[in-house]
Length: 67
Image 1 (cartoon, one colour):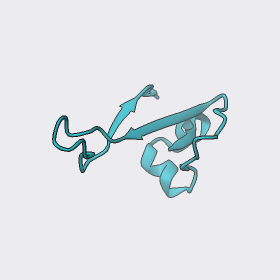
Image 2 (tube, rainbow, N blue to C red):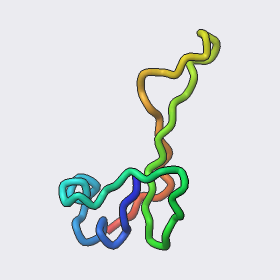
Image 3 (tube, helix red, strand yellow):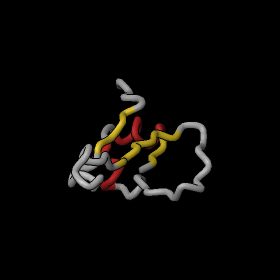
Image 4 (tube, rainbow, N blue to C red):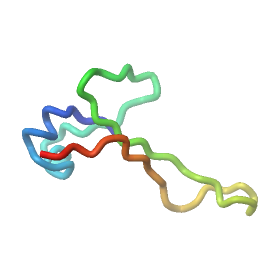
């Protein structure tokens, strides 16, 4: 999921950016732009139980802006 930092700063929260329709899912061929805030989602295997993905997605937050 990708949003622009300027939109996040202007609107004040991730929820407000989503409500404004400015929070988008991009494909793996997306070229990252200056000012992008990216939320990476991925599945983690269950570790030995048939290598099936877990039900919930885990995420990495790379940057949390402070306004």
